[in-house]
Each structure stands twice: as C-alpha cells, then as structure tokens.
Length: 253
Image (cartoon, rainbow, N blue to C red; front, side):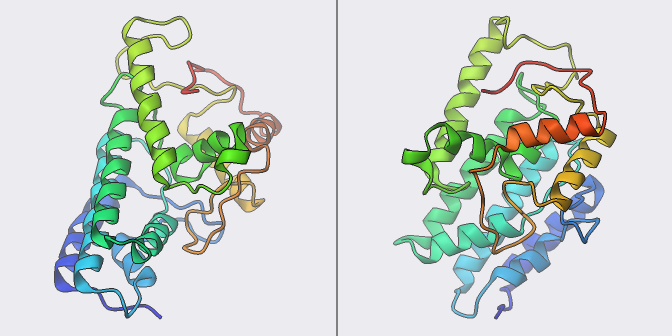
C-alpha cells in the first residue's frame, strides 16, 4: 500500500519533474514510451509506516540524482527511477540511521553522475550502463564469490565506481594510449557497436523486450541479474541489428 507524501517532498518532486520533462526521460519498460515522473514514483514506493522526514529525504535524494543526470548527461535517452527509489528506501528502513543512509547513497550516486558525465574528461554520453545494471553486472562477474550478494546501490560497488573514475581521469590527463584525451564535445564510446542515439535506443529496447537487461530499473521489485553474459549478449544483438561501431573509444574498465 502506498502512502501520501509530505508537502515538502511534493514540492521538491514537482520542481524536479518540470526539469525532467525537458530532458526527454524515456523508459526501457517494454510497455511504456516515457519514464514515470518522480512524484508518482515516490508515491508508489512509499508505505504508510514511512515517516515524513524519511519520505522528504527520499524526495530530496532522488531529485539530487535526477538533476545530476540532467546536468551531466544532457543527451541521455532513457532513465527509469522506480528500482532506485524502492531499493534505497528498503535499505533505509532496515538501517539504524535511515535518513543518513539515504543522504549518503543518493549523494554518492549524484557525485558519480558528475564524474562520468560530459563535464569531465571521461565524457560518457549516457547513464544507461549505470541505471540498467551493466556496470554492476560486470563488476560482480569479476569476483562473484565475493560480490554476488551485493546490489547495484551497495556502498562497495559505488565506492568502486568512484575509485575507477579517478583512475580514468588520471590516465586521460596524460593522454594514455588506451584512455586518450578526446576532442571537445566528443563522447567516449568504449564499445564495439555504435552508440549514436537512434542505434542506442533501438538496441536497448530490443534487449529489454527480450528480458536481456541486467536491471529492470522500471520495476520497483526487480531482481537484478549479474550471471548472464550481458556484455556479449549486447554486442551480439548490436551485430544482429547491423549497428557497427563508428566511434569506439577507451573503456572505463
């Protein structure tokens, strides 16, 4: 059962939703074209036992992440917030300091958006690989015995992404042959297939329709999956669709 949101949360979410409408904010949900706005997302995941302070922090944190994505990935195509909101709220309910947990996790996720986006030398074009679990599935797959029980919003994974971002920035700063500097305004594509907008949308909607996305971020009750070869499946689907790479650049690793 959902719960009504406190007035401060409603104000925060309504202001952020107005910005998201101009961003595009498509969904990868097979039955839906557009992503849900944050206000109905938070109304969906809130429960009657959640206090107003917790729900206001949920709204504030989700808005912080969304605004960081808008600023750092202005060309992003798809973003679904349901799982992120539900997952972090579930974690907060079980924590000794629920508000503190939300503030820390949302703050770190927002910081990661800024590190990997177009305002730094890393300059990825989309936030898709984070939101839909590709980065997380790759990380777990490298050491499943240690990481299989960790989720996409666990501190250990977020810490890894933050550390890796600073490693990449160091390599790019010296024009590393694997991680070179890029011309101004050119996005970094580490993949063996095109990530131009039409190709990106076609590829990921095809994968979502087949259930081949690591994290169904549009589903608040999704069960993230790391154990399939998602990188290979995505490359195979891209090849089947004829989406040859035209702009490959160094990977985030």
